[in-house]
Length: 339
View (cartoon, one colour):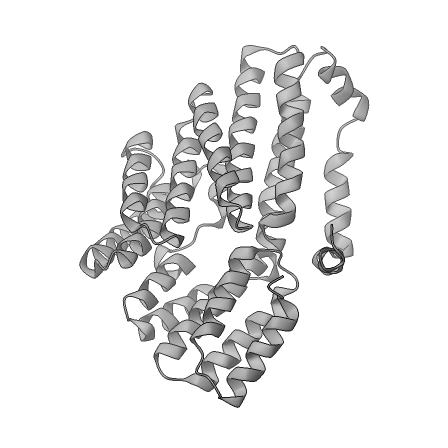
């Protein structure tokens, strides 16, 4: 690990974060884990502990981004694999262990994607699809497919993204959580925008918001905690920027970020970057740089290559030989060196 990574690591974890992270390790006696790994019983208490660790990873990722969370997910995957291979458990506990493995593979893929490790992300996701199928967990499988679709959208392959999202819908069926359907539709909006299909994008967005209006939160999987009204999501905001609807993009992104707390640091930075792009399209150079500068002030708290890439892309759009633009680029290069 280089010195720059060490410096950022100190900035990323507050005392409270470290305390919370440590607490997830000591919530169950170490001897119980060791015994299970050596052929002992994997009981409900141990399965619950594993599931709690996974939920903690979700929220840690919201806070600091995927780069460091990937290492934590990898360690937990190794633990679950050893428990499946060596432990003794009931059929019910086996399903829970497979569920934990499928979700950790999904999360590891997401973390790798956020860290720009795209080939690794695909490997984790492919394994996650197999594991979720083996565990009879179509919702996690659909979540994996949706994140594979997002990766393709970021790569400019909107058609594959649409196909993956359609496959995710088929996997869960029409009676599944309407919030999950709202998520799939929200992410498809941007895929259509990348394809240059504004009519299809707006039709899917209307369907997404309708799903949201008629959702039953009690029917949602636990990992759906982060979802909000589709029109307020960052992916939809980015889609609107792509389609040239900068005024609407700024309004909806600002509405969506109004109640975002620091627990969602990465989303805040991504949202500010999207707003800055829209303001630049509005020819509001000063406003765009001011918004992007707010994002840069938070970037040291988020270890996400995806965030860094969005800010660098914004910097490249700025006009040359404008003092404010040159100052912004210099500040960004200091905080996010390319090498």
